[in-house]
Length: 105
Image 1 (spheres, rainbow, N blue to C red):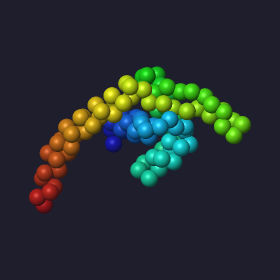
Image 2 (cartoon, helix red, strand yellow):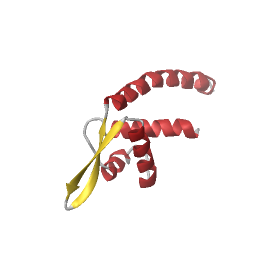
Image 3 (tube, rainbow, N blue to C red):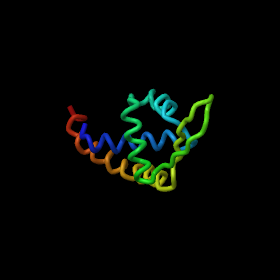
């Protein structure tokens, strides 16, 4: 898979994982696991990129005596998910065009 396409898809997946509630690294990985495997190092790279892009914010809170970073999706992050949904319709159309010859076989 093209690395830029995969990066964009992973960004959307992480945003979707925190769309309904603030979350933290381990929980994000756990929530995504049924759909996609993601290492901690990859996740934290994505989270930093999304924070730099102002698609999420980070707050630190104590949990069981330890500090934990919680991630919150911003309006810009929500708009990115909506843009992806629109883009995805076009991607599905392209996929259908590419696959049409294979369907007839």
